[in-house]
Length: 84
Picture 1 (cartoon, rainbow, N blue to C red):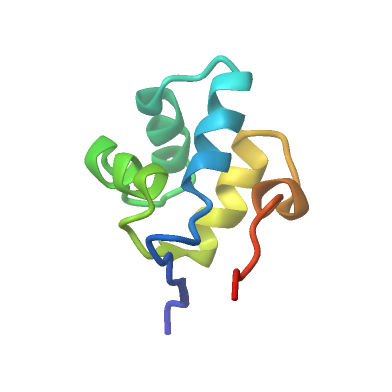
Picture 2: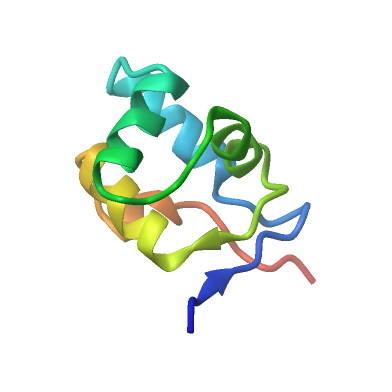
């Protein structure tokens, strides 16, 4: 069974991932290539959706992204909270 994390429009890790990718001087294509090298079938379109917050990211993809972007989960989820 593959587990996914649902991204809701107002709560998304996409902006954090985009900022981390830019800080690492990587293009979306380079991140996708690294995901594919880890046997995660991802396209640039899917990765774009991840950054836009419209794709339910798989936990395996999240783990790989933390490795690719040389970061930890706290940084990926930094600043996210549920506003009441």
